[in-house]
Structure formats: structure tokens, C-alpha cells
Amino acid sequence: MWCRNAAWRLARLVVCFALLGVFPGGYAWAQSKPVMVYGVIHEYTLARLMQKFAQDTGGKADFIRLSAGEVATRVLAERQSPKGDVIFGMSRAIQESLKAKGLLEAHKSPRRADVPSRYVDPDGYWTGSSITVQGFAINTERWQKEFGNAPMPKTWEDLLDPKYKDLIVTSSPLTSGAAFTFVVGQFFRLGEEKGWEYLRALDKNIRFYTPSGIAPSRMVAQGEFLIAITFAHDVLKWISVGLPIKMIHPPGVSWDIGSVSLIKSGPNPEGAKKFIDWVLGRDPIQLIVDLNFEGSIRSDVTLPLGATPLDKIDLVDYKLDWAAQNRERILKRWGELFKK
Image (tube, rainbow, N blue to C red):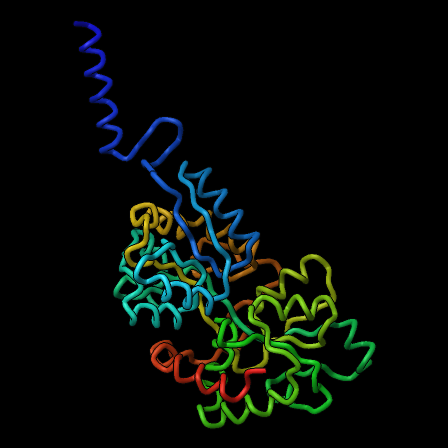
């Protein structure tokens, strides 16, 4: 009789744990399979983030690191049988495009209250996690060898000088969210017609368009190219390890935020929601800022070392709705004009 009663009490205890979502051994909830994260930020940062998720929650998350365009293509290709659960680090314009195609599912995380409303989708399909600003980077050793004490470029128009022919590298908007942010930034700065004129003139000096938005800063830091058009956080990483690279923010800088979203009909929706709620917290965001050098949109997270405060940068008026609605048209035309 005692054994039966003890077994019955144990069974009740297990059921209670299951209903509460709390298990012994540090698990915050019962997780039958890992959360699959499609990440856009650096692979090392994603790996550390997954480790911290396991430490903080007892759950498990795996990741695949892709460029923003590759994530969008993959999610669309998998729409009949999604393999991913979460998209992390994606620009708003691409998130809006995926939302319009019915590829995302709304999730209004409790953490949304910690994020300024301008960085949150009111419908709940994506929530901002970090802010990134653009500019161009210069390899200072190459500059000294090739141009001596001549002044460095300070404006976007300075990059059109014929002396920079084949010395500039940037990424392709067909695969890179960073490049798309740059392209539409020129439209917001100049108007679309003059923006296309500027891009055609700039193309004469660009030697190569990389598939990844991360690659140009690395190529300039290592001296393969003189100038890269890129996000500041990619450059700050190379500065932090002592490589000869300098970041310049010209007037009319484009910007965007990294954001997190839930893939519709993913294999692990409950785990995905838990991951999103966790990753928007202060400590995970501070880890991302410290490792990835991105800016934070949470007021309780400090800026990365060497970052220029936003109030010192002349930002364009980034029109998210316009960028999202015109993305496919812009990419089609860009591919016709510039694909090398």
C-alpha cells in the first residue's frame, strides 16, 4: 500500500512539474528538441549566444549562420515544411517582406516593453534587438603607402573620385541585408532617380561585390582592398584587435536594426518563443553588443568600445515601409545593372 501511495505521489509530482514547465536539474521548461535559429550576425557570437541560452535556461538551441538574403531565400524555399524556428539579427525591411509573404508568425514577447516602440512591429511579427549604422572603412597602412598625407574621403561623393577605381569593395544586396540598407539609404539621401545615378557612378570604382555583408570589412582590415562600404560594428571588431582600419561616418548614413522573429509553422514553436523571450533580455543583448560591437536599443546596455554615439552621426530618414514594399523591384533592377 505504501509503495502504491509513494508511486502515486511521485506521479502527481511529475505531472505538476510538467504543468508548471519546471524540471529539476535547471531546466526552465520541457524541451523535446533544440530550437533552430537562422542567424545573420557573426558565427562566433551566435555560438556564444547558444551557450548562454543553455546555461540560463537549461534548453538547447542550434544555429545556422547565413547572410540575410540567404535566410530569406531559405525560409521561402522551406515554407511547405519549415526547418527553422527563429530568425535572428535580420534587418526590418527583409522581416517585413517575409511577413507580407506569410512566412512569419506573430509573437508579442513580454520583453517588447523594454524596446522603444519605433523598433517594434506593432503586429508582433518582429522585435528589434540591436541597432547598426553604416559608413566606409579605410585601411590606414595602405592609405599611407598609396596616398601619403592626402586627406581621406569624408563624404559619399568623395568615393566617386577615379583614383579609387578598383580599390573599393562592398556587398551585393541580392544576398546581403547590409548592402540593401546601403542602396536604399542612397535613395533616402538623394531621391531614387539620383540615387541610381550615384550607384552607377560608384560602380565604376567597385572591384567586387561580396555575397556576405561581413566580408568587406575583413578584406579591408587585411589589406586586400583600400575601402569598404560596411556597417560600423564589423569594423569595430577589427579595430579592437589592432588591425589598421578606420571607420568614417559621412553625412547621410543609412542604418537599420537587427531583429528577431518567429518562423511560421516551425518544428519547435514553444521553444522558439522561449528563445525569443530570453534573447531580448538585458544580459543576452549585452553579450551581443560586447562580442558583435553592435549598438543596443535597450537603455540598460552600454555601447561597444570605440563606437560613435548616435547623436554624433547624421542619419538618413530610413523609411521602413517603402524599403519593404519596393525591395524586390530594387533588387531586380540592381541585379540587371550591377551584378558582376
